[in-house]
Amino acid sequence: MSTPEDYFENILKSDLIDEEFIDGIIENKLNIPKSNFKVILVLMTSATKPNENYLGLVYRTKIKFRLLDTNEIRVVDVILKIAQETAMSLNELNVYYREKIMYENVLTKFEQIYFDKLGEKVRFGPKMSMFKYEPNPIVVLDDLKAEGYAIVDRKACLSLELSKCFLAKIAKFHAAGAKVLQTEGMLHDCLDRKSTNGAKPDINNPLSLAFARMHDEFIKALRSYGGCDEYADKVEKWDRDLLATDYLYECKPMKCGLRVLNHGDVWTNNMMFKLDTNEVLLIDYQLSYWGSPAYDILAFLAASVHDDVKVKHFDELVEFYYQEFTENLRKLEYEDSIPSLDEFKDDLQEKGFIFAGFLEYLFFIKSSTEFSLDMLMNGKDEKVLQEVHDGLFQDELLIKAVKTWLPFMNERGFLDIMIVREDAEKSS
View 1 (cartoon, rainbow, N blue to C red):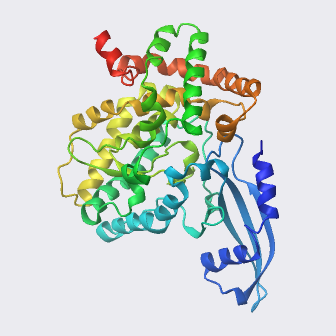
View 2: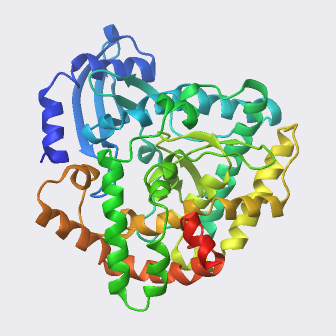
């Protein structure tokens, strides 16, 4: 099985990243014609740690060049996101094309609406300077680390203060989307999950089968933790179709009809903070889609907030987001009815399977065992695969997190929301 390092070597030996490609980055990002510069040095290093790149390989790239008319030496810092086999096999998700649309059109439109309406300069993410689709999709973005932004440790997650910083920013993003939807519609078909390739993925594809295996391994692990059998009994009754397909493709609006453009993948590795000012920007817009804001908020609370904070301050964070969101809707002159706080909370409860589902995918965030989606999807050696799953679900940090969540989730009814309807009716 090929490793990310092997894949990187293959990329460098191919013509995927050649002189023309590097020159094009400078031309597009700095608007300097090729005739006026010469590249001196290109340095590429991995921009992610183990377990932190799932749909692509991410490289921090520093390009040093000389201006021919002045002999001035300059440096440009960019991020290259390169699709690997796993992402390219998930064609129904259309992840790289969607990200191109987001960076090329949507983010600038959302930022412009705040400037036009309120005179406010808002930034939602890095700028894209180049996109190459064939033979492998490559997205070239500003390197936010070079601007002083950093990613918070995925295992520790966010404090209450940083959680509110993020919620304030995503509230602006959601409000801009709600307003744009009124005036311009969905902007692009790829942002409507219901129309992506016309159907949900086959539940027997490698990704769905890998998730089904993870579900079984999680239940087995729960029963080994001690004192969790009551919770394991409920998880064992969860709707597997919901986990395998609807979890990615569910995109209902609120009952009042309100829809926003969800980022679609809000966790700590997809947000970068400038910690001296607490400014936050979002990255990785590969899964963005129209739907209720509950999807982003529940995913954020599950995947990004420190375990103790999410349990103790769940309602406070929900209400903080609601106030920020509705205030921005009013400022942007949103013309439809604005839901009440009770309506918003009811919507969160209805869509609570998003929050619940993250429970068994916590290993993406907490575990120290090295793995890749490709390994989980296509691993042929059963002994090795079992060792990987055992390592993922027996990590002490993960066990502590699961045991912190479970009583809270059970009390709030989140463990019951994915129970198949027949079993739910029998137990009522």
